[in-house]
Structures are given as C-alpha cells and as structure tokens.
Length: 466
Image 1 (cartoon, helix red, strand yellow):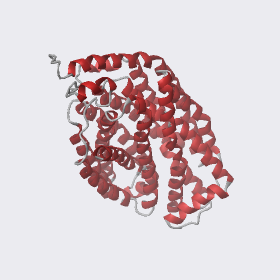
Image 2: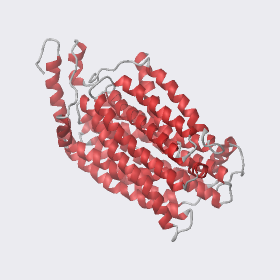
Image 3: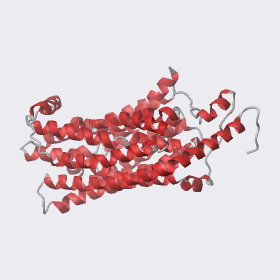
C-alpha cells in the first residue's frame, strides 16, 4: 500500500505541474487587457516559461542523478506553487512574467527528477504501459489546466492560479509520506544483487556526458523533440481557434472563451489512447528491439492528415450567450450528438491525438531502455530541453504566423491555416524515430551487458574499488 500510495503521488504531481502550464493559454484575452499589454505579450510569457522549465530541468535532473531525489521533488513543487500564486496576484506585466518564470523553474524539477524515480519502479517488460500513465497524467494535467482556466477564469482570470497554488502546497505535504525508491531496483540484471543486500551506488559524473551523447539512439530521441514540439507547441492555440469560431457566430468574449476551452479539452481526449500506444510498444518490443521506436514513427506520421482535417471542419456552435459554465459544458457535449460537424471533428481529433500519443510512452520507455539508471534523469532532461526549445518556438512563431496570414485569410481561417502548416513538422519527427529504431538494438544490448557486469560488482560478497 505504501508503494501504491507513492506511485499515485508521483503521477498526481506530474499532472498538477502540467495544470499550471495549461492555465494561461485559454486566458490570453482576459489577462492581456487587465495587465495592459497585447495578447502576443502573454503568448511570449508562455513561450519563455516552456524554455525556462526545460533549462532548469537539466540542472534539477543532474543533481537528482547524483543525490537523494525526494527532497528535490518537494522543493520543486513548492517553487512552482509560489510562482503560480504570484501569477494570480500580479498587478503588472513584469511581475506576471517573473512569477511565471519562477513557476517554470519548479516545474522543471517535477518532470525530470520524477521521471528518474518512476523508471526505478517499472520493469522493462511493462515500461510502455506504466509510463503511458505517467505521460497521460501530464496530458490530463494540461487538459485540466485548459478547462479550469477557461471555466473558472472566464470572469476572473486570477482565481484558477490562486486555487492551484494551494493545491500545490498540499501536494508537497503528500510527498513526506512517500516510499523511498532505490535506484536501479526495477532492473532484472540487478534484482538478485539488490535483494541480497547490495547497493547500486553508481552516480552520474561530468565524464559521463560524452558517453550519453555517444549513444546514437539518445541523439535521435533528443533531436526528434525539436520538430515534434514545434507542432505540439502550436496546438496550445487550439482553444483560441474555437474561441474565435464562437465569437464569429456572435457569442460574447467570456462565453466564447469558455466554449473554446471546453471544445479544446474535449477534442484532446484522444490522448487517453497513449495507453494503447504503450501496450503496442511493449508487445512489439518483446518481438524486436526496434519495436517501440517503430510504433512511435508510424503513429506520428499517420496523424498528420487527421490534424489537417480537424482544423478545417466547420463547427456550428449552439450555446446560450452569457450562460453559466455548467450550461456551456452541457451545450457543447450535446452538440456532439446534434451537430454532425462537431461529431466529425471529435472523431478526427480522437484519431489524430490517439496516433500522436503513441509517441509519449515509447519515448519514455526508450530512454529507460538505452540508458543505465544513473543517466536517465539527465537524458530525459536533455530531451526535455530540446522539447522546450521546440515548444517555445512553436508557441511563439505560430502567433506571428497568424498575424502574417491575417492579410490573406480572415479570422478564424488564418488560425486554421497556421495550425495546419505547423503540423508538417511531425514529418521529420517520424523519420528520426525510424532512425532510432535502427540504433536502439545495439544500445539496449550495451546497457544489458553493463548492468550484468555491475550486478556482480555490487553483490555483497564483492567489494570493488571504485
């Protein structure tokens, strides 16, 4: 029960920090005028937060791979909770910017250090499945942030920030009772030595960094995030597309904001299918060491045409203007059954998100497969750094693209065209996963041999000089 409680806490915390990430985008139209800036300036805050979080994660992960990880997770959670509270209290744009950056620093710890901990709970045979829940918790968190931000913040954008910061403090207290997870305890090669009293005390050092980068699979896993996250970063504007469509049909700004958040949340439910992607990856990996990477490659490439359809299917939105949040939610859900275009859009979105969600669990699992335990947090954070650069670029450049396209395409068509163009970045991502599938077998075999050698060294009857 203690172990189950600990896993639950780690998964919930991975979700909560993504709620913080998802709060701002649906509230651009509310935050910008209140702080006296253009909407693009708030988009810049989101882009900067992605980048800062990714850079901070590298430092957090390196320290986590060398030391006790539990205190780092608690400190990181308190930092993002403080930054989120500061965001809700900020009265000026510079203060809002600083508070969001502070929150991003703390968020970097939860993702990178938490990943290292979770991989020590998961055996290779079930990595895809279990890490799909880890990734899904983050996706659910982002969706919850979009929904909470749009609904609770429709009339007062500060409210969701203050509420989430209080939840973050409570989550920190939950950490105090979690199970202490031993590094390497899930590895079959080490299980015998650790069960007999051995201690896997290898830790990362600066000399290991060239070794990490020398693994070809690591290079492809890190680099694919640059193009993938340009596409994913653009998708944070999905609520904006549906909000503009609602306004074009005559709804007021607060109601349109709520409608956009509900539609965006509903259409991203396909992310739940990441569990299927994890299961398929596990099954194929047992047949061939290329399995996980091939599943991710096919999923990413097959999703592109479905995204293109999603952005251009017209929606007829029947929602009473000025209705309370609950009525807006019910009206949107009802339109799935009563409006054929809404139903078609939902089906297309489920397929698109389901296919791309195969990327997440298999990426996590591949990092664990091709790296020893003391390297995983750092490799994850390096990948996350490149992801952050790509996501910041996608999030920042898409706003400029919308403005440039406005002269040729009236709103909301300019948003649809811009989003469609940015999804083409998924194509090089799929190619890089295919290249990773070619190098993965050799790298997996190398880690297996290394852990077998170390198992003999850490056994109680053996006392090596290290």
